[in-house]
Amino acid sequence: MLQKALAQLTGQPEDVKLGESVTDPFMFQDYYRDQAPDYLAKEFGRQFAQAVQKLPSGSWQGPIESGFGWHLVFVDTVIPGRVPDFEEIESDVKTAWLAAQKALAWDKTYKEMRAKYTVLLPAPPADTNKASGSANARVAASKSPEGGTQ
Image (cartoon, rainbow, N blue to C red; front, side, top):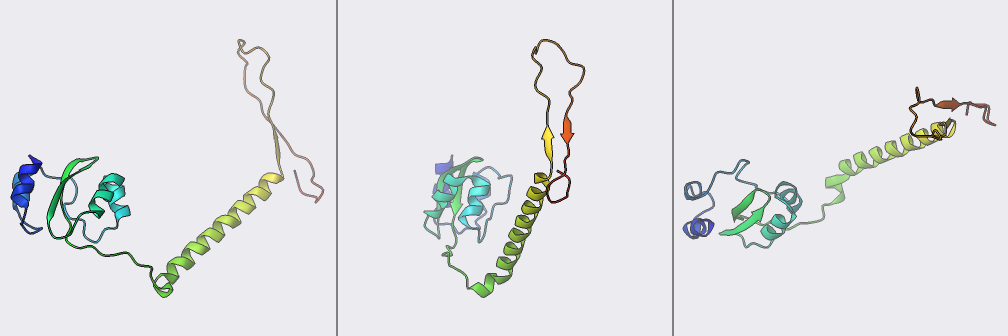
C-alpha cells in the first residue's frame, strides 16, 4: 500500500491532499518543520532520524520505519548545523553555569552534613526463620573534634 501511495505522491508538492486519501491518518502532527535530528530521534527513534537525514529535499520518499509504523516523508528544506556566536548563547551559558555551581554547592553541603553523623544498624538475626517483633535502628551521635555533633 505504501509503495502505491508513494507512486501517487511522486512529483506532488509537500502539501498535496492526496496523501490523506492514500495513507492512514497519523495520531500526532503531520508536519515537523525546522526540527533537528535529535528531536526526530526522540519522537520517532534513532533509525528513523538517521534515515530522514539521508533523504534528498524536495520530493516524497519512503517508506521509512519508526516505532509507529511506516512513513512517507517529504523533506522540504535542509538547514545545515552551525556553531553559534557566543553572544547568541551567552545568557544560556550563564544560566547553565549558575545551575551547575548551585548543584555543586548543594552536593558539598550535603556531604558535610552527612559527615557529621554515623548511623549504626543492628546485625541481622542469626536465625532467619524466627520472626522478630520489630526492626530496630540506632543513630549514634557523638561530639566531633570541632565541637559539633557527629
